[in-house]
Structures are given as C-alpha cells and as structure tokens.
Image 1 (cartoon, one colour):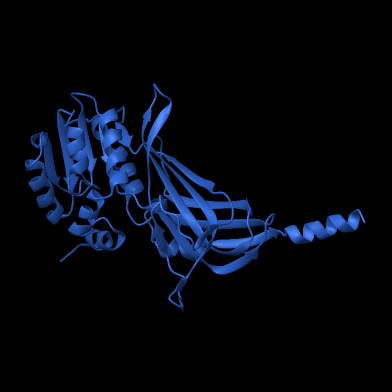
Image 2 (cartoon, rainbow, N blue to C red):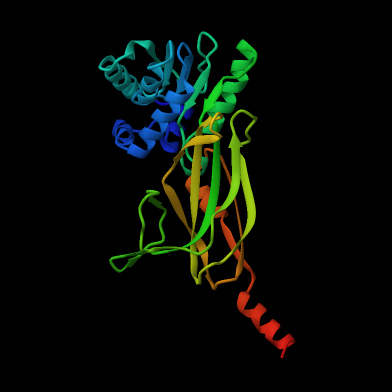
Length: 307
C-alpha cells in the first residue's frame, strides 16, 4: 500500500516508469548538456550528491572526477537499474546508490555539488523546488554553511503567444502539446517575442508560487489561441569565459480558453499563476489574455487627428 507522498509522486511524475528513464538516455541534447556541465563543475576529489538518480547516468558522469558520489533514488525499480548499469561502467564503484526519499535524505558527510534533475517545463509536476529548498534547510541544520553548489544553478522561464494548429485529420482538439526545441512545426506561428516571467537562482531562497502579468506587442496577425512555455536550465556557469552550459526543456504549449484575434501592433496583456510542482491543468486554468491596445483603432484615431 502506497503512502500519501508515494501516491502523489506517481501522479506528479517523480515515481516515473523505467522506460521513461530509458528515453531520457536517448535524448542527446539532455545527455550532452549534462555531461559537459558535470565534467566542468566536478573537480578531482570532490564529493557529489545526486537527488533523484534514475538510471545513475549523471552520477556516472560525476564519478569520473569525484572521489565519492551518493546517488539517491526513491523508485526501487530504478535503484536496481542504476546499480546494474553502474556495475558495467568505469568508476561505477565510486557511486553509492541509496534507496531513499530525496525529501528526507542527507549524506553522511558534507558534499561539494548537488545534482538534481527533477525538472519539468515551467517547474511543473515534479518537485525540484520543494526538494532543493527542503534539502537546504536540513543540510544547514546538520552541517552548517556553506551550501554546496546546485546543478542546475538557475532556471529561466519565458512565455510566448502563439497561433497553434489544433486540427488532427479534421478533428478539432485544443490539447496540451510538447515540441522539441530544434524542430520547425508549420502549424505553429509565433505572434510575438518570448517574455521572461521568472528566474530561479538555487543559490538563493526560492519560493514555490509563480505569478506573472505582462504585455506582448504582436508582430504578426492571427488567432492567439495558445501560450508556449520555455524553460532554460543554466546547468553550470563557466566564470573564466563568462558563459554558461545550458539545457532547454521541450517547449510546452497550452491552449487558451478564450482565443483572441490579433493584428500587428496590438498589445495583449497576459497573466497566469501556479505553484512549482503543481499540475499542468492548474496553470492552464489560470491563463488569461486580454487585448489592451488595438492597433487598428489607434491608427484610425491618428488619421482623424491629422485629417
């Protein structure tokens, strides 16, 4: 019998099936970005903790330089998979796979870096923020400061107005859609530039309530019927070069309950609110878009004044 947290985990995505983790191994963009970031950040002799280790691949990357890696995983199926895979790979013996809940676990000693990839677009569904903030409090209570470096170090989130095709062989269905970031979809029309609505810096306290209200000036005309949510994870900062190693989640497009017909120059006010780790429908239900400047009316007023 699952307890309440385990039931919630099944729904929210932390206790995800084994095959989903296998798909993540095949995501070359994700794998290459994390490998590059971990190889840069983890110096020889460091101690590393991974919260939510899955197959153990990120712990494996860390073990190539670290002296010790603690890989914490809650799903017993994934614990077995991680131990099996790590035994096949060089330096896998440096990784201790711990069957424990990331909400409660603390390593037996201070660590230099904490890797936590419980990341969904917009920081929804999975418990990245809650896990990290809880860990900070428990870590400081046991070991004092300083806190370890977290990976990702920060997350930048943006929204973008779209006209999105919802016709599926003649069947109209406004649904949640996910798109790879490197693919062009003819049925997706960008009506305005993205606007940043939140930045999370994990070296600082991070709240779990995300609320935003902002305006977009339309660059194209069309039917505004969806918002695209963009999540850029700053995995590590390369200070000597002044650059970062980043990873972009797939884009998430959510349909607007009340679409708007817009033209170039129109200004649309958009608002939404949700809780980090909350459900996609909770964000979808909060989304509002309202025309605040009608470019056509503004032109008519201008022409009347100078007639």
